[in-house]
Image (cartoon, rainbow, N blue to C red; front, side, top):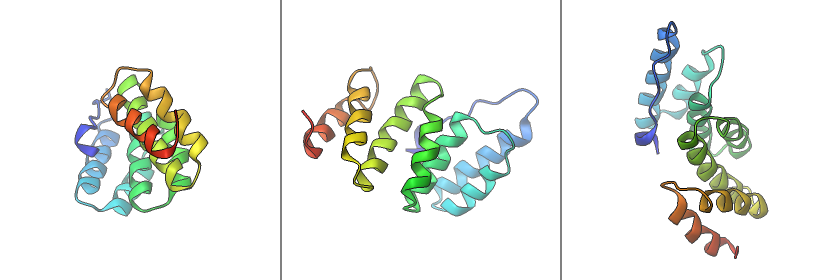
Length: 129
């Protein structure tokens, strides 16, 4: 998942951008707690950071925290929102919240995204129609 995350370089906020890049490197290396620690240093959060935090929490099996961050990430651009919806559905499944998972998956089926076909298949697996 982290291979498809791209941080856009904000003007005048290069320190935060560098922190995000370091957090992404930590994530890719499997250092999820270090990634989270870096992201916590950023004063104002944004959907990209929230997405990465959500993915970190999923890897750490802290699904309620993952859910909170992924919900925030859904406010981002369409690509970030779609990725957040996909991983939010997975986090809901891990928490036994099938109804919420199906709602997220159905949103993905309704939009053109890289997750559309995966969402269709997962809906069938978890008992949706």
